[in-house]
Amino acid sequence: MNIPFLDLKAQYRSIKSDVDPAIQNILDNTAFVLGKSVTEFETAFAKAHSVKHCIGVSSGTDGNHLALWALGIGPCDEVIVPANTFIATAWGATLCGATPVFVDCHPESYNTDPAKIVAAITPKTKAIVAVHLYGQSADMDALNEQLTISNYQLKEQGVFVHKTTGQAIYLVEDSAQAHIAEYKGQRVGGLGAVASFSFYPGKNLGAYGEAGAVTTNDDEVAKKVTLYRAHGASEKYIHETYGHNYRMEGIQGAVLGVKLKYLNEWTEKRRAVAARYRELLSGVEEIIVPKEMEYAKHVYHLFVIQVKPFGSAQGDSVSASASARRDALMKFLGDNGIATGLHYPVPLHVQPCFKHLGYKKGDFPVAEQLSACGLSLPMFPEMTEEQIGYVCGKIREFFRK
Image 1 (tube, rainbow, N blue to C red):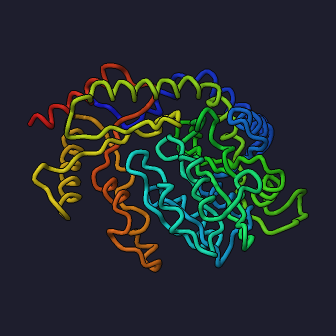
Image 2 (tube, rainbow, N blue to C red; image 1 turned 60 degrees about the vertical axis):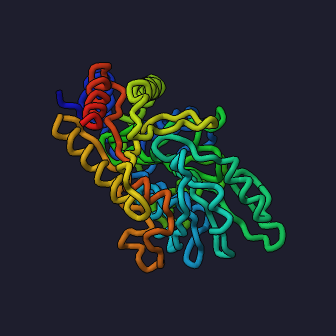
Image 3 (cartoon, rainbow, N blue to C red; image 1 turned 45 degrees about the vertical axis):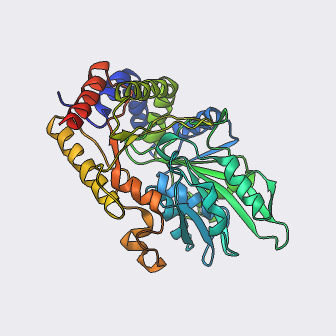
């Protein structure tokens, strides 16, 4: 049996009768950039996340940049970012000229560890980016509490001001992997000052190319993002401010508008796949399955297990042992037709591009351990009982051997 990591062909076949006419309509009307399809999607996506504004943009990375740009973040500012995330999260800061400051992740949620925030805050800190990683929301209340401990008080949604110095820190969401995920019953995207989303084709809600969005309840932030995405212009050839070309394509708006109607159904199927994985992998002592935190409704963009090191490994050899065992499992599954993934094998603080920041291996042990032993199993709504059973059976077979 051959099982892909995700099956976009199966998804396309299931919605072909809806998505083909939507694309054809764009072609017939040559509405290739922004336009009605994008506007309609923006309205529907904002409603789905209970936020006031959604601005469609050209990618999730561009959304990260726009979110921080609209908050006025620039050179000499620092932005706190988890070490365990895709590098696009950090690009939001660097594209603004700011410096990313990395923190470790929580050992159970894999998101930013709120307890590590206080030590990372300096007089230059301008924003904290909470990543809802793998489809599970960050612990937003705990992050808020840590800011309160640091003598900041909440001024307005996602905006904290220091009681003595007046320094403002913005709480920003990177929701690239967490469409319609929930935190304590509230959907992500409106939990901070501003949020970014990615619609890369492999995401839970994926375009047929690159696309992203910024959501916010702040009118001024929404106005700035709308200007910045279109060369700083509110009308043609009148440029009110600096900007960029970060506009969403019409075809992507049309595709996303169709897919959004299926997102609730697809999400529940992902959750069912995750539940079945947990059931069939129960008792496999050599792995750790992902934990769904009590405050979260996980949407399972990824299902990342951890492979434990060999029993005799001690000290510095633990990560190497876990990595070797994880890689052996990955090869065994691949040899048996099962595609897997690594998210993420190199933490941000030891990426070559950030060498100048002075971080070193060992600075963030939880993120480093996850990079050494994490393995992403196939996860898509169309997975069958037979496919799930085959994956789990092969994992059990590997450890029996």
